[in-house]
Length: 145
Image (cartoon, rainbow, N blue to C red; front, side, top):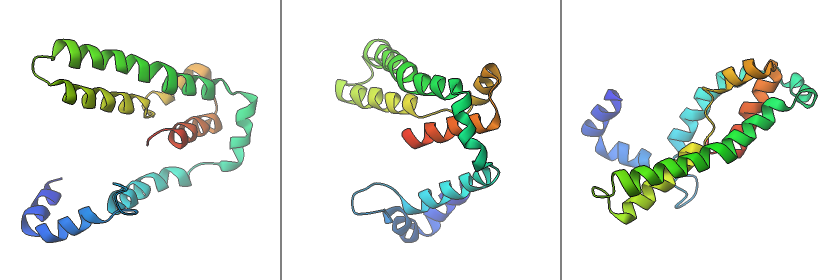
């Protein structure tokens, strides 16, 4: 991060050019960020035994729980918590328009799958590695990350 700040101060035109690289006009999907994310994900994907994924049908509980938690529990519980914080607790500090944006952002973050809880879910459901991969793939395929 420090290198990025220094680069921005030393070469503002180059940083602005990188910032402007998008997949399509107005898509707001930054090409350098997308490439770096794929470079970060690729090593994990190389370790996956893709042939074992078809075994998920034998024990789908982990996948079902992942979908229910990601799409029913997290977004609605976060909507409630965000409403309480931004409409009640901090209402005098934040305007209604800003509160709407913060609430929407919290809901989107809640809908994004969190891989941190999936290993414990896998242990609890006694699922195999193919199931854990399917959980993550389903969460990322449907989700925002």
